[in-house]
Amino acid sequence: MRLSGKNMHFTLGDFKLKANKVTLSITDNTAVNKSNGVPDDSVAGDVEASGEIELTTNQFKVLSKAAKQAGSWRGLPTFDGLFFGKTDKDELKVEAFGCRLKISDLLDIDSNGGSALVHKIPYDVTSPDFVHIDGVPYLDPEEIDGL
Image 1 (cartoon, rainbow, N blue to C red):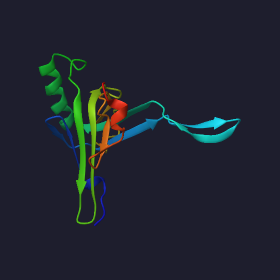
Image 2: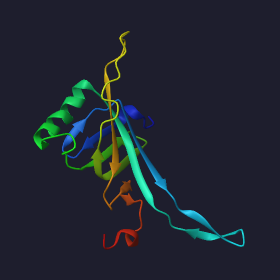
Image 3: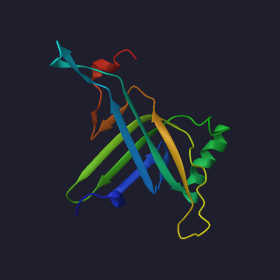
């Protein structure tokens, strides 16, 4: 059996959540260096990572309790995100460090019904530890030394 979204598990800090959908995208602005218009090696660019979590109201309430304890949604501390899946043939572990949550689509109501109410929570990765894929950091240790 191959790995699919049904095999993936997701945690934010100490909270195990069942998300309808989770995304994590990395933007790496490394660029080609040119000499006289001809490619001549590359230069490291800045990086960022962000994503979005789609939760049903039941799972959204888990985060709501954390926000209440923090005093506000904006007062929530950053969380480390863990995305893990395993089957008999495949395994994937992605970690995103220092995820700062926001709310974008608080409500998306369709009066026709037919699907559960979904809440979209975008997040940004804010830690220099950035992202690890199967235990391997995306950034070179020299890039984050001293941060």
